Image (cartoon, rainbow, N blue to C red; front, side):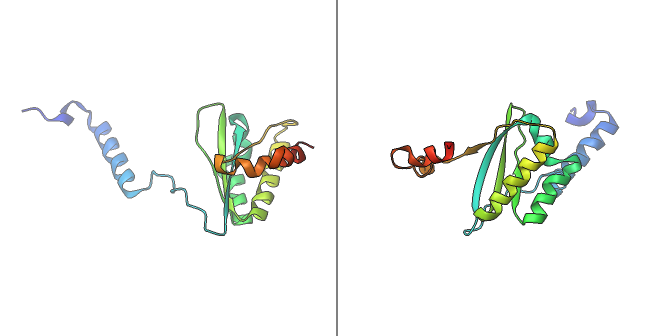
Length: 141
């Protein structure tokens, strides 16, 4: 009777075993996204993927600074597509400060023009648009 791992070279087998152990121990996993506390808001921005590096920074320095300086949950989604989602969890005043700081990082990266889009749940769309479109007109002006 032939065993499954007989065809796998010894070094490769050990490497696979080590990977499995790390996954079991959780060393190779990203920390789970935390839900915002009840007094916190969660805001999601959609940015072009090419700008994500400026926000994350070398070795994650910029995003770590945002998290510690503002005591906010800041995550940049991992996506191979043309856009990435930035999730910010904090009170609304702090969220505003984080967004302003993110814009500074984009300015430093040499992006003179960039587009940030806010993702709004459809249940809140009416609040953003306003009665007869008044709120959205204010935002455009």
